[in-house]
Length: 103
Image (cartoon, rainbow, N blue to C red; front, side, top):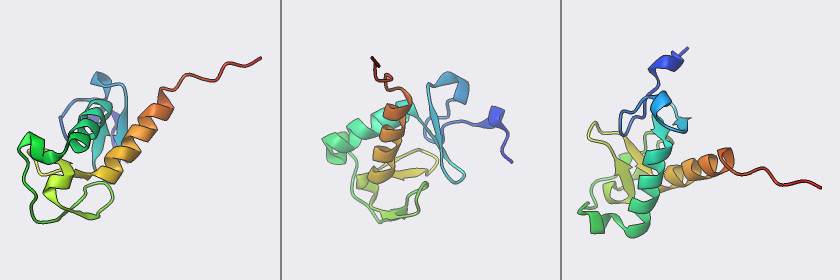
């Protein structure tokens, strides 16, 4: 079992206590700040940020082969594909959504 105190974002290295939400994957974690960055990065296009398409590598969350220019990567080699970034954004949106006002 993983120690909750040791959980850090695999992309930026921030501890769970330093972010609003930390999403766990199989051996990797992604914080809300990296999800927001990844969403913006991938929406604008990796080319605008100087990222070159490269050989496909496995997404650290889902294992899907993903070209480097179509994913968010950390200096340590953690790679997160667009689908996993989008899923992370959906999880964060649901976690912080305002509850519907009732009658």
